[in-house]
Every structure is written in structure tokens, then in C-alpha cells.
Image (tube, rainbow, N blue to C red):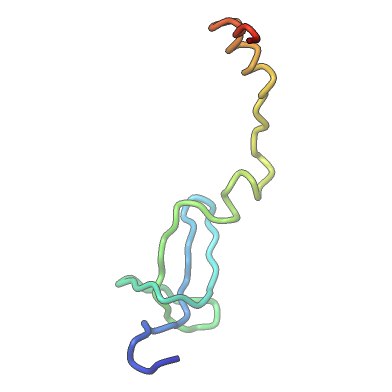
Length: 84
């Protein structure tokens, strides 16, 4: 890498407040808030709205859409188009 043109790449804690989940990884993101981590070190912390601990796909609470019912409802509402 070319020296002097890249942002600092350092450990950062990402915290999901809704799920009470946090993980330590490396990133170039900056933050003025810090948190003391399990290893005793102090790291910048970034609060996120959704993580793997709260996302419906990863938690298994995702809903399956009834696409056949939607098509039927659309056809009832607007009618079926005639074949040309």
C-alpha cells in the first residue's frame, strides 16, 4: 500500500443496542465514543441498528410472503388481461 494515503485501520467495537450484542473487529470508521472491551482495552464504539443478532433472516423470524395470494388478489381487483 502507498504510505500516507490510507485511513487508519484499527480495532473497533460494533454494538447492536436492540439485541445487546457487540463484537470487536477491525475497521477504518471513526467514533468519538469509546468502550472498555472484555480484554481490558479501550476501543472506539459504533452503535448499529441491525446486526446478525437482531436481523430477522439470521434469527429465524423472517416471514414468508404469500405471493400466490397476492397475485389472486391483484387479478380480482384489476381483472385478468385478455390474451392477444
